[in-house]
Amino acid sequence: MTASLGVVTPELIPFETPLTLERGGYLPRYDLMVETYGTLDAHKSNAVLVCHALSGDHHAAGYHESESNKPGWWNHYIGPGKSIDTDRFFVVSLNNLGGCSGSTGPLSINPETGKAYGPSFPEVTVLDWVHAQARLADHLGIEKFAAIVGGSLGGMQALQWSITYPERVGAAAIIAAAPRLTAQNIAFNEVARQAIMRDPNFFDGDYADHDVIPASGVGLARMVGHITYLSDVSMGEKFGRSLPREDRDAEGVNFAVEQYLRYQGEQFSGRFDANTYILMTRALDYFDPTLNESIPLPEVLSTTQCKFLVLSFTTDWRFSPSRSEEIVDALIQAGKPVSYTRLESAHGHDAFLIPDATYERIFKAFMDRVHQDLGGNV
Amino acid sequence: MISHSYRIPDWIAKNSRVLDLGCGDGRLLAQLVETHAIDALGLELDPDKIATCLDLGLSVIQQDLNRGLSNFNDQQFDTVIMTQTLQAIRRPDLALSEMLRVGREAIVTFPNFAYIRNRIQLGLAGHMPVNPQLPNPWYDTPNIHLSTFRDFEELCQTLSIRILDKDTSNLSGKRTWLGTVWPNLFGEVAVYRLTKES
Image (cartoon, rainbow over all chains, first blue to last red):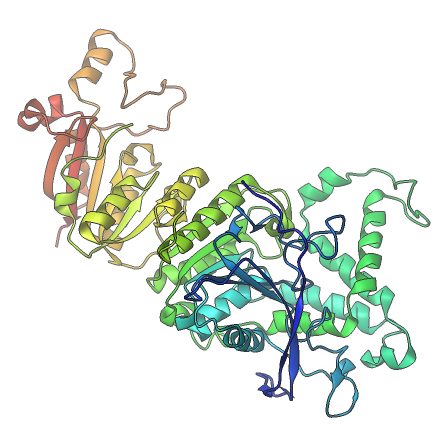
């Protein structure tokens, strides 16, 4: 039986040891906003790290304040009896460094200047996030995660973990991800960044000094991004060529899909920081464990020690199945234990967030086995 | 449900690397992990069967065998197994060559079309055999390349494949004495252990 986690409460955890960053910057101290679900067992062996994607945060499951609110972004897959079963696992989810949901990021005060970082926040990478997550694990007394899981950019963190801290990962689930971005992927991110940077309210990232936000630019960035998360099929099914809804603002809108995208853009620009969006897309662009093909992927993965589950979705064109298969083939070449399924879905890249019986069944079978291999009962 | 031939485990070395093409629900691989401590990998198309394999703790890749094994290295496995699938592959000859490229040895089982029951259904009753091993009607069947012991051995010769061992079993995976004496007539399932002619 599956049930809801109910109301969950995040916790802000301070880290006072400085962190040197991959691309040259450094943070004298930082905070991470963290949620945990389930109970850490006596051996501290049942921890699962959930990594969020571009616009996600620590709130992966359950509800804040009351169940009438929107649940966490992966609520369908995390909870009692669910794929990541919180009756079995202790789930750790955090807002990554540079984020805008409570962890140290551009909105935070730089202790060295006494003023918000804004655009001066140092560039962070997937590797930096993984190092920060490892320190979080140390703080929680977790020597080794039973599994590290994530979709999209979250899957890249799981992959990076298996490479950087092989002895600290029991299993990795890499969903709707890619070993690195293509030119087309980077191009979409650049359009999103340009939309933000060309907003007159951006002020080179110093919008806070002017008491404004580049809402129009962030909204436009989200609209472009959102199109790449859906599929032609799912947009066709959801909107087709139907006309705008009359119960919502429809000024200057000719089709329902336009109204939807504008609504998504507006919602997003109200909650997401522009500098964080630029920083997160850059982290995506720079992710490349092959170091610009100087080391072939099978060789990069040759030191991993965990078992892998890789999942892709048929209509995902942001990170298409063939991108996941690059990871799978490299793992096969490296002789590592890997399972893979290309799941049928009409939902494009967003499919990794959406309820689906087969996805759920396969994900759960993998995770239940991870738990069983810890010595737990199924 | 057709049981796996009793002979297969005899042909698998302990702690060896085994690839099972069309591994289904993973029964054979899971058994070999248990008894032979093999390093197992399965290929399967059906997501439900993949989930069942994951329940058993197996590693399994969703892959269409008709698209070859180009993602595997030469001689990456000690043994490549294909049970009751060869007849459903678009090009069985290419599949066999690929199996012996990625594996040192191959184990293949398939329905013997010259089995007496098939001969009676075709030769006397005058229609395509339909029976527990070949349950589908001719117009809607995955079994598009039916062959016999004799046909298969001719193909092996053409492909320079050496037959290390052969056997026959019934649908329960057991040996029958008639099948052993006269496989092409009384062998229900053909079971071969192959390697590349050196």
